[in-house]
Image 1: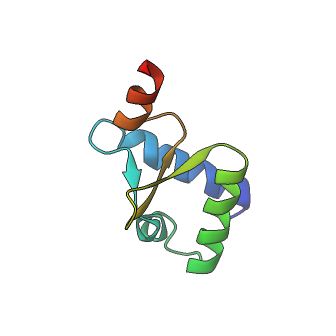
Image 2: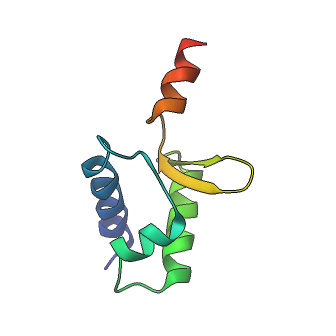
Length: 80
């Protein structure tokens, strides 16, 4: 799968789950792209964070990844 198709697949997955969950573990992305190596998926997710498509969220002990500007935390930040 080429890089742009993989990025589109990740964004579509996140949009399809947006009503129930906005942030996911990195390992969840491995399942979205099962034919890709884990390291390649990790690099792709990092690239998408750098270009502003995705964002990291950390609770201090856990790091989750989601679409930039989605979720309860984003809504709370917009109000502040």
